[in-house]
Length: 400
Image (cartoon, one colour):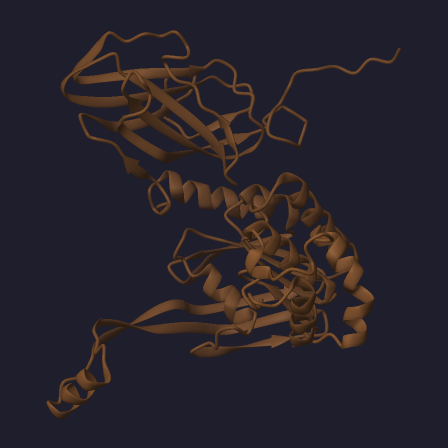
């Protein structure tokens, strides 16, 4: 391992036993042993032959759909899991933010947990004492530091975990899906802290579904699919490759859709079209985006309400119009049909977005069919030079 490398991952694989039948009690185990009956299982490779070299000072992102193996890889790097094959070499002190607050003792106070977990992370009592006020201030827990953490909200848990993990001042920082959690002000504090780490030449490894954050923060990205590394390189190129796989159906996004409703009307398909009438999932800021919702009503439905919603990739609800609020009254539907929702000028900035579609009764309390975040579409800035935020608002600067 050369001096310029922070981590060297060499042919790492992880396999699990996947049981089909398993003894549940000691008595069953003993009886099955006497009968010569063994538990039935097969091996599942969560990771297979991963080779990655991460340089000192790099910020790298690991992406992939749920179940791809990216979090398993992160746990192996963080020394939480032992690889079945291969090895990992390190050059520097490691700190991992995986399942923030998981190591806290519920009955102890916030202060007691800081000293206990700080010691586990390698800090001396003197070091913790020096950093104590900084940790509490960052976590915004001045009024609550003396109460048991079992009374903390999930947000308070998270803030304390982040503050404590970063206070260790590691050479290598590992982060698993925490940037999309918490309120906006705390997210800004997280990004500011990570930028400080980058400026100090720290190595940062991030796993996240928030592709915008990966592209903005990282120097390099790795795409994991079915336990194998299938793409690596500049974040923009790897993310584009990932999105192409999704659009071609070669990768399924497993967290869509949650489908609710009585089923009197069923949504058959949701498609996106550009201004030329071409089916596509890719748009530029300012483009026309037309959504066609195809449905089948098994009986006559009077005064149905169609609604849609757009969410950012980290869960922010951007809008949620429906036909009733828009004054677009529908007398009834029956049999096959389709409805279109048209955005004349898409004001969203570059990123990946979830789309939800639903059909409700006129009171908007009973869903006939509700596809929660059933589709993705992607926006590029195109000729727009702005880079930050969710929306593009045409404007001008003027000196007076």
